[in-house]
Image 1 (cartoon, helix red, strand yellow):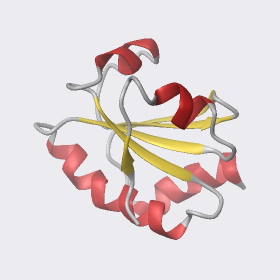
Image 2: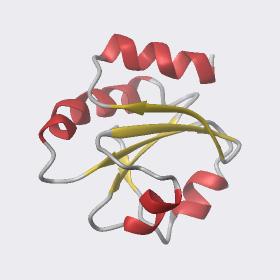
Image 3: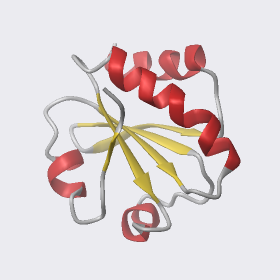
Image 4: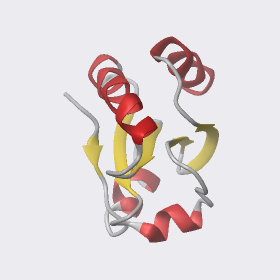
Length: 107
């Protein structure tokens, strides 16, 4: 299982209505660091599917949500709990660092 794409139109149902915490990877095709983080995010999606929903939002194709959450640089990963931002991770990080951030919110 890998992170699923989400669009501006799907945001409310997929993220704000989610029953478990959501990790959203804000990315773009042209972003080198995003390509480094992407396989790590996919691994987390596969390993943590029981307690975490993992999505990817392409900021070029879906600018509304990126603007609303003031995503100024990518990659940015948002951890949302009950529809509210619980943690923001900006820049590329390794898997262990990302999992530590996830565990702060998900437990």
